[in-house]
Length: 167
Image (cartoon, rainbow, N blue to C red; front, side, top):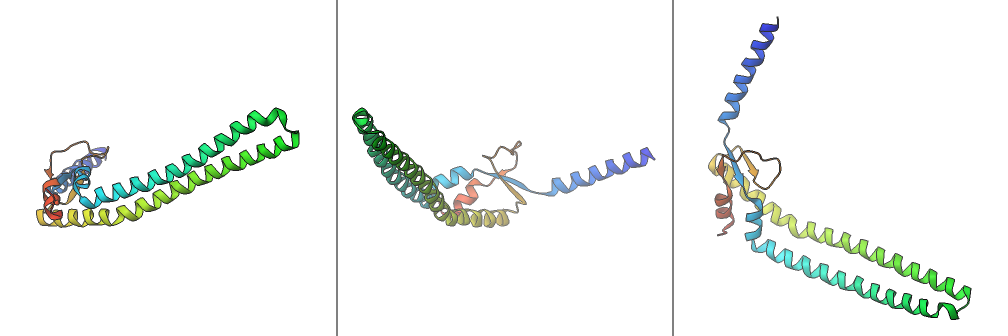
């Protein structure tokens, strides 16, 4: 009984090996492709400008809050306890506003990234699919992913560049 199970497992292994060897594999350097695309460069520049603008707004608020904090610290010994408590609450509210501003800015940036990169990703995926069909590749792996261990198949980077009109 054990021999027939072992024989069956060996036969399945040989059949699966034959199936796998018939498939054509290719690798693709997606990062290289994206870095050559003018649309990606433009999106990166726009996102960086947006990020810098939001960061400047946050830094402006932080500078104003720091100035108030310093002023309140200097004046605290001369003020009543009630005034100091009110100022402390005001500073806490400013800190909460800055934290909220930071969170909203991060969310806005993520939303803009998704909107900017979605058409670029679609264009690359369409070009990969077209190049894969034209060259008979069954699978195309990104060479930049951790999961890729063996890179012996054809390199699809040149064919995808050609499909996108990149050099």
